[in-house]
Length: 252
Image (cartoon, rainbow, N blue to C red; front, side):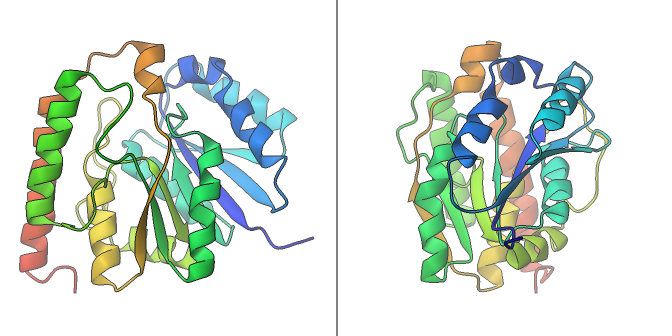
């Protein structure tokens, strides 16, 4: 049996609507055509809808997939739990809604052959499917975040990031702001991507940002009304915590 090449971690919290849109079939349909070996870990974050049962049935029919059940703690902790179980040489985490379709992994993988340690998808400055309000909140977030941390990276929040396995495990083990599972209500995301990439930069890992296709399919499916400015303010507070922690020498 050949060595496992790619592990894909997909966090899941009350994703029944997206699951019924056959997003996992999209992932399987792409992977079955590839020459490399792969696994998909659905890391559930204590879903309370029909997500777990749906994923269980899908895993029974598709051996590449497996379900990892976790207590509710928010997206960062669901991703971390999946990464810790990943066995592939390369570890990718991506969102369930497939706003960035799985075929975009083909844009990221070649950079590992060029000795990059972390390869992150970037939606750039133009994001299809964003409302005017969300574009404004996103722009403000990027400007302020670049002033504080990771000034050379445009998009820290795209949920499509790949790492060498050992690098991923090293980075997640060093998270401070998102070190322990906190009491969460709903799909708590936060700025854990920023802390993760900041630690990678501090550790001297080679990072590259790669343009990927992206469309907000989740908003189209679920019709959510998110409080984008409130979300951005919360993330900026967390970024300030990262900045202050660094000034105190916490990331040495």
